[in-house]
Length: 484
Image 1 (cartoon, one colour):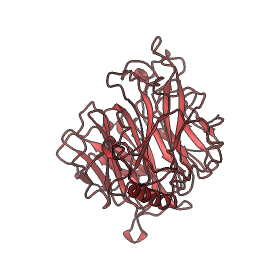
Image 2 (cartoon, helix red, strand yellow):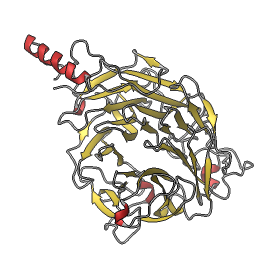
Image 3 (cartoon, helix red, strand yellow):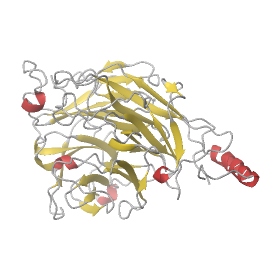
Image 4 (tube, helix red, strand yellow):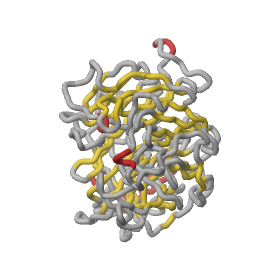
C-alpha cells in the first residue's frame, strides 16, 4: 500500500482487519526486559523494496530505534547475542577484550579470555565473535603471529610489522564471563579468519559427528600467508571449540571455476539444518556460493548471477545468512545501494534482487547480514541521504516478512543523521580501521542487534578515536509484520 494512495472507507476497513491479523503474528521485542538508548527522534520508515515508503494502518506503530555506546574504543566490529540475551561486542578497549552487557545495553563491562596471545596493535588480528543460537555458546576468534605481542614496536606499526600465522578460538558457555582457549598458533593460516557454527551432516552420510556438543564449529582463514593467501583453509571442531582439525581448503581445489578468487574476497560461512556449509566469495568474473556437504572436505561452486563480481583489491562484497527454515539470504552493495536476494532451494536458484536500504539513503558501506526465525532477516550498514556526504550514519534494515511476495521492511537510523558517525579513511588513512561491522539475532530469532563503530573525531597523527556502538529496532505489539 503506497503512501501516495488516498484512503477510502473500504480500504481503511481492509487495513484495519489486516492489522488485526498482522498483530497476531507480531514481531516480538528483544528478550531483554529493557532496552537502552531508545529515541523516537531517530528516523524509522516502513517501506517495500526499492525504497517505496508505505503508510501503516491507523493505530499501528513503527519500531523505535535504540542505540548506545559501549564506552570502549573499538575497530573492526562484530556482535553476538547469547541465549540469556547478553550482548557481546568485539573488540573493546583493545583487540584483547570484548564489551559485555547483561541489561540491554544500559551498562557494559570488559571480558577477555584468561589465556590468549595479546596484541599491542589495532587491526592486526581480525577478532570475530558469534553465538551459536541453538545453544547460546559464544565463540571468539583471533589471528596469531610471531610479533603481534611485541609491545616495544612503534605505536600503530602493527599493520606493517605484524605477521599472522595461526589462530586461537575462545569459547564460553556462561554469557562470555569466562572462556576456554583452543590454541593453534602454528596452524598454516593467516588473517581474515571467520568462525561459524551449525549442525553436522546426518550420521548416515558417514560424516564425523560432534561429541559432547551438538554442533560443528568451523574456522576459515587465509592460508598460508596473511592477506595474500593464496588459499582459504578451514578447520573444524567436533567438541564445541575445544580442539580443531583441518577440514579442507575452500580454495584452491579441483572444483574451483576458471576464475581468480582472492582469499580476502571470501566471507563467513553459514550452515543449514542438514549440515551443508555455504561460503560466499566474489571472484573476478562472478560471485559464487561455495557449498560443502561433507564438513569442508569437498565443495561445489554455484554462481549467484545477480551479485557483482570482485577484483584482486576489492575485498568481499557478497554475504550470506540462513534462517531457521533453511532459507538462504544473500546481500551485497551495488551503485551505493544495498540489495537482498532469497534462495529457497539451498543456493540452486535465487529470487530477483531487492533494493532494501533506507529510502533515499546512498553510498552504503560495510553491510552485514543476519537471519533468525523463518523470514526474519536484517542488515546493518553505513549510508547517507546526502549523495555528496563524506560522513555517514549507521542504519538497520529489518523484516520478519522476507518470504512474502512483497516483504514489509523497516529501516531506521541508529544515530541522528545530522550528526553522522563514520568516515571511510581507507587502508592507510589511520588506525583503527573499520574493515567490517556486524550484527546478530537473539536465540529466539526475532530481535536483531547491530554492532558498529562510532568515530569520535577525525584522524589525528594517524589515530582515529572510536567507541563501540550497539543498536536495535524495538518492536511493539502495535508493529505489523506484513501488509496486504
